[in-house]
Image 1 (cartoon, one colour):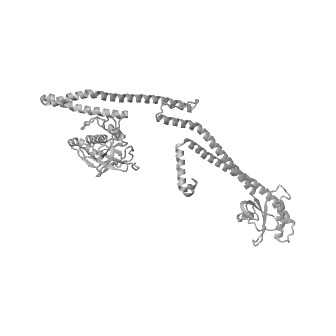
Image 2: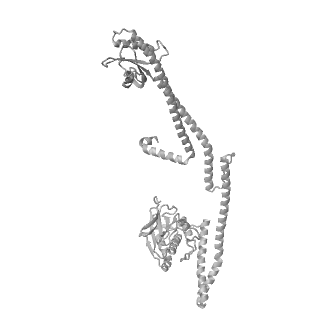
Image 3: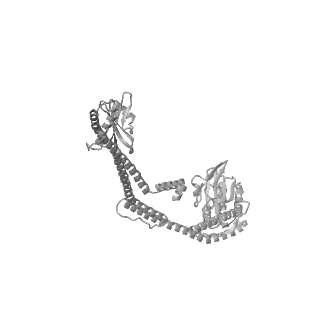
Length: 537
């Protein structure tokens, strides 16, 4: 991780940011601790800024008071010393003598209570030539302008001296003496005040860090008391959803969490009861369907034998009786088809349906299914536009089930094509093959893409079934597709048409994920398409 940070800092930072953002979105505890960290940091920074500003202002005010008092004493001492020296001496000598007195006072020789300072004396003659003692200290010009006007002024500035550069309070005042234009400046270092502020800032930083850590620990402890039961409830709910219907929360105390546990347990108990009832009802229903289907086999066989005998002697019957015999035979065919579908769907419900897989050319299966419904399509004036690969597509499948899937899709397309052409297309991808059957008839309304695979569901009950379907064909087709590890999907648009796409894996035992054909319906240059991502596997 550290190596990645130095070699790829942008990628590492992006990954860390994404991880933190994901953690922020998924964890209440992270949001609580982060909010406490942000709010406490802002509060501590604000309090530290206010305290530091207040303390700094107090120190400067104290320094200014000391500077005013020191200036009064220093000015009196300079006036006294200048008056005591011989006026015939050079100005520089007289100024040096006066500064020597101030230096002794600053060092605490005479008054130990006086502040430590450095002094500068400047005298200007008639030609504006300055005589300054000492000469290595520069006084700001702005400050000198105020002092020349007879005012006592001060300024905070950085001073360059023999001991290096330092911040100081510079206060200046005019001096009444026989030396014209005499100015006195006291330079009071702010080193002690800066040290005090630095100590104050260090204490605030250390105290702030300790306080933030304590607040984070407190926030973690308090949030853990709330998040712990929530996480436990989440885990129990996941296990309950996975089928462990005996999972319950532990009720501890009488607080909100305990009330949540009681409500959850009550809900879980009712749900588990309903689920068991539904399972029992579904099991009874499947058993009833299976039993009835099997029990009807024997009487149906007997009726079929009798109907065949009557049909064989139809020429000897009067026209009305012959017509009745023909209708009986036709309805027996439909009843046998329905009974066969019921038996097949009951086998899927019981989980006993199995594959008789063998390697076949799927193109032949498609052609066989087309041949079985072509006569019905010709009766309604519907044509098939078939697009199959030129090369053989040999795959291990249960040809009987795949042919039944395609036959149901083609028959359904004929029923809803309204006489328009039906497109049958087949394509092979990297890990799967697909067959799409597209009609340009009534189409599907929004939300019907999944409902078409429900048992006995019909989009328009008044529409006549030309193929004599039982209402179970698409439901059985979807079960057959799932049994192969494939998918059967539908898409459509009202007035444009519907597309049913069967996707099967090329290798037995695999699961078909991506499909080599789009799930789309085209009409007059308009395309309704379901986009898919990923590669075939």
